[in-house]
Image (cartoon, rainbow, N blue to C red; front, side):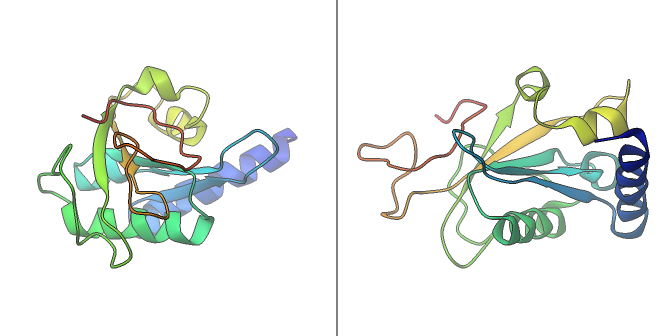
Amino acid sequence: MNEEKIEKYFKTVNQNISKSGFHTTYVMENIDFTPFGYSTGIYENFKIPELIISGLPNGLTTELIKNYSKKYRFGTVPLNKKIHDLIDRFPVYLIEVQNESLTEYVLSSIKYYHNKKYKYLQLIFPDLNGHFPNEPDYDYDQKIFGDLN
């Protein structure tokens, strides 16, 4: 990506954060690469951690991030507990993630926050049979960045 495109992209990131409180970045699937999406701006504007989701399509990732930001803004986010009402399709878990494990992934947030403090959670979802990564018979391509107890 050339400098002009990078500048235009970050202008869009900043405009989205100004307009709705956050921006969602989505990185498409590629050979031997799991797609992922993440928020930027939620920590600063809604006082809850940013969110990263690995392995879901763009529309669903965007919907989950939007639902998360609306449901928990300025409140307490339940960690390591099965959540049944973030989306009507399946339950999810929210787990803590160390920023250091995301340095190759959340580039928009790294640039946006620069030297300011921010935190991330990862949304964990079940496979097509309803199994989570910490359960027997789990079968799905979801990169886990934190610990799911």
